[in-house]
Length: 348
Image 1 (cartoon, rainbow, N blue to C red):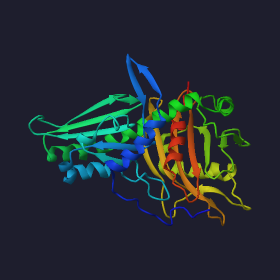
Image 2: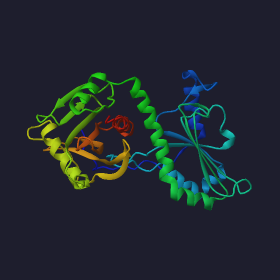
Image 3: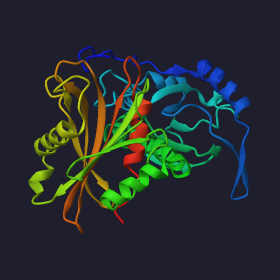
Image 4: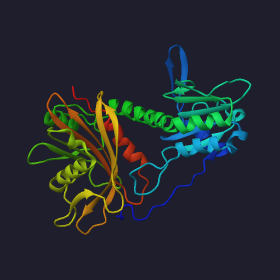
């Protein structure tokens, strides 16, 4: 058990350098010998763990403010976690060290600054260049100043590209390995489809049949999904305050705590949920990240992420949420897995 958000520990802002990564990838390369044929090419499987990225850059450029800004963007703290964890874990190598041993890395960012070759800063994307499923970005620039401006304007875009690449890999895994029984329960109750992780095997419906709680049960790391709908009446229902209030209402009657009269609620005293607009099912969506806690004299808590959309055809609001309980453990990977599940919602 732990008290969410009371003790915030900041991660180190230092990126791993090449030797450490080489050791890990050397071991991984001996264990991952699967190959596949893609458009006539033989590609090895990617190496490394989820949410790791290799940055290839000349040692001289590592001293510039432009590169430090780029690192800050890649390693920015994930919002809505009780302890600080970076969006991506960064390792760095020089172009001369970027050999066949490192080229299968799952996420690669190549930075090249050369006034003799380039007149302006550009960003290039590629998939499965040296392995699969691999994501590669290459930034070329004539000067550190030009690179600095580009990072200021596009740092979030660069980071989100790799975050989504990891989500896409998780979704591809879910398509092959999902709990069809739980998925059928969702479809029968709400009329839309969603891929449910195989570890999530328990469910509880509300008395009104407009909310559903799915859980992996009592495990060291517990992952839960919460789904609820209600009639759409006006756009004011999508305001942050309205969405937070609705969440608390649903959780109060659906998710009780471990002691009498306790229930799951939203942490607002120390950390407020963070909302941002995104697109989902080609429509407006509110994404919220925050902390949950058990209200009523307990110390249980953890992170949650939710997505709320308008189902125009049925004139209803749909919220899908994932939350994690993992005392004394890092939570980035677990909440990201649930985020991938949320992205698989299909209204039709």
